[in-house]
Image: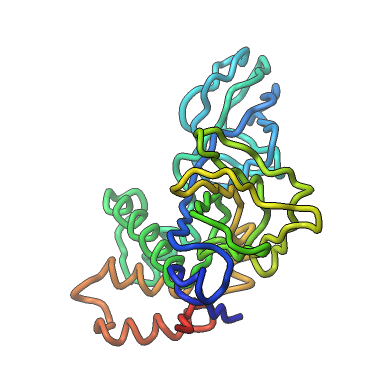
Length: 288
């Protein structure tokens, strides 16, 4: 599919949707824990969907009652939308606290990158750390160039104004999975959450529209009074590989070149041509 969109500073002129200075940024909220189980590995149940992928690293804080105590960093195995396991045996269950993602697993692994780039050092070599950073940078580059989120993630979209009843979300809000809240801050600095019966969401197009009775708030602070918390991205890496394999290949191309600069098979121009060919069906393009 091709996303053809105007530049984001032209929203008010070309779309009549949102004013300039629409900002989308990734966030990592703390997720409330309901309980840990007596098991090996222990199973953590969260109050709301955790949006993690197997292999992500999380930090556990303020969880009480568990033996041994659950505190610090753990690599998770996802079991369900509100359940995951940690690689530790728990003999007394605990409750409460939070978990926060600290390291996100990338769509390609270090081993896959080494195969693509013909790098043959052993697993665990200190240079693997650098390749992890390279993969993250390559994934962010593809997300920037396509306006898509390659892996599931929370994002906060901040807006100066909404001028019409229909709002098209800016880049890196797709594939849109859900809207968690729409919040406005008034002229006194007080935040208000817009009731869900005031708006509808079209996930396929990434648009938010007021219901028949819905209205946008009128008492707003001057700068970026609106905040929209959303979840975007492909639900799993397997889903990304199935639905958009060219995007994974683009990540591999960019990362392979970065990992082997000066001795890879690409010139800079050839890399750009092949990379552009991979992302062309997904690129956000200006119409102005």
